[in-house]
Image (cartoon, rainbow, N blue to C red; front, top):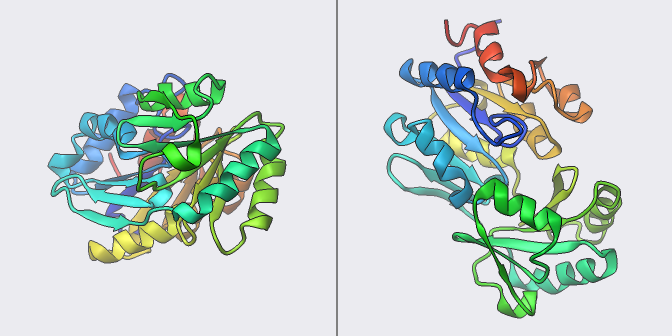
Length: 272
């Protein structure tokens, strides 16, 4: 079967970047070749725009008409024009519920706004991990509900991999219909407006730019990548992906450390 691939959607952490949060030279070269052939890139992540733009600049996505899908699809922007294609903030009325989950679980609630992370617990190791990943400073707030700036596109509940699965299920059950809740790493739970996920947002993007989901190749490694891998013409799991991701993918490539993206592009003849 042949596919008319015109857009490549890429998760970041665990997919596009290695453990040092860098794009390997081989992967960078492969993606630049794809863009020179007329294929657009879409960086698709739970990260905020501030934490994604340096990678977009490295990939020269403004020059080649790339797209940033941030907050798992809560904010989408065109790198070339600056146009915001999707914007859906989290309702402030939900914050007391999330603050209650923090108190009950012993985990930490945090959010992003512009170039900063906001939380009541700035020393939390997982908050510090997010700070390093996104190169964002952490600001301490006395009261999360009162003191965080608006609008908020998403919040995160962060904690140990032992706590995350059980509280993900609890929050999904108690907030059903009011929020979209999913894991992005073993220690991050994404707290999003209802109806926001990568697959839904990419479907909107594809319509906006005059393409079909079948024109997309998508790469991912974690639970929040499942919906975009399912809708893509070619959905690819990284070799280091969660088993649930591999189960829905059309193909499993090598790991993020071993140039899995470049190898898949060669395997499918996207680049030569």
